[in-house]
Image 1 (cartoon, rainbow, N blue to C red):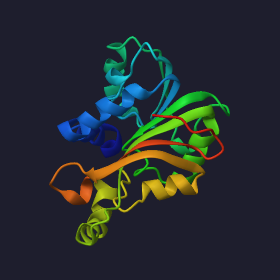
Image 2: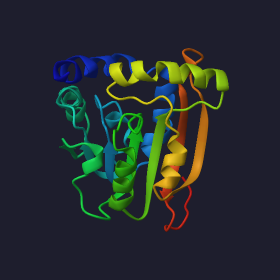
Image 3: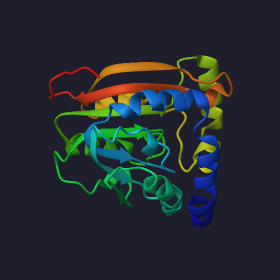
Length: 213
């Protein structure tokens, strides 16, 4: 449904996608980005104001949804950042190998159809010593919550453009060649728990030297 995807869904994300518990985590992790940055699935651009211009040289803003780009453009103009929009899906990152110092993803890996391919692409474009900062939601360790996630996943995939409630993001990152160096996890808001079990932290390709977040 292109009309829903491009004209309605972006406004739903803008309205519902940044409640205070989520915004608090964004404010902690996005300023850690440095150098040349690739942000996967920028959505309406809520992270743009959180980058530290003194640390960030450039942001490649990957977003295949034209409606999201329309919402993100005013936020781009409000910053001092050098931001280039890349209107391709995450499975087709249009950057050369070893191009960026930091990759940022916030609530994106749950929606990508070819998530394994996207993770391999993220690993490919990171420079030696680069880092992947992630903030994602997915499968809950609570059996009762998981039962509800399984029931609600078809609705999530329809209403939120492919959102998978039962993806195990840390496991997918490890399978994709990353080592998770730091991670926190919890249900960020008490209701509805089926939608709010989150992980956030840093991962690096396993061949890279470790470093502190």
